Length: 199
Image 1 (spheres, helix red, strand yellow):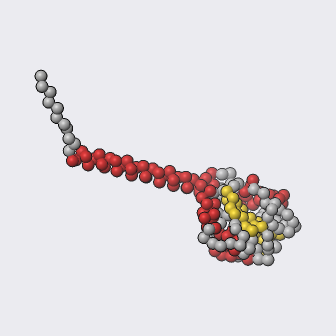
Image 2: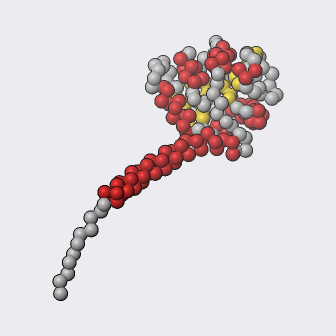
Image 3: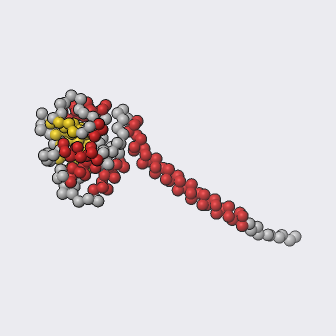
């Protein structure tokens, strides 16, 4: 009895389809990886809408930053920006010789802010904290900048009353403190800032 073995060779068409299959797998892997990365980044920006008080990231305008710095003219010491976003107010304050810090819950914005430090030279190096502002003590600061929403201003007012020392300057952007009388107001519309002195 004789056995005949014949080797079956893949046709060029079959070889080509297996190459496409490998390429397809690589493309699916890359696409999936990009999708996961984008989801991780975007979730930091979308999740504030799911909280009890919605705190979206809205960047400060150049005029708003100018108004804040004008409001802080003549002040010295430590500054905290509550809801520091992309960190531009903290960086501007640091350029004006404040010991400036920012508090922001969005990890990616804090990372961006920290990277921005290395592109500039500062006398007092700014710092950014990725944490919940309600758990962050305001006691060491005598200049407080607030970027919040209307729904949180009353609670922030209470926090400032309890933690901030007398004579401290508070600058509220976009929304005023509900019960305090400002010593001055600068700007109009979304660029308005209200300036308060803790008495």
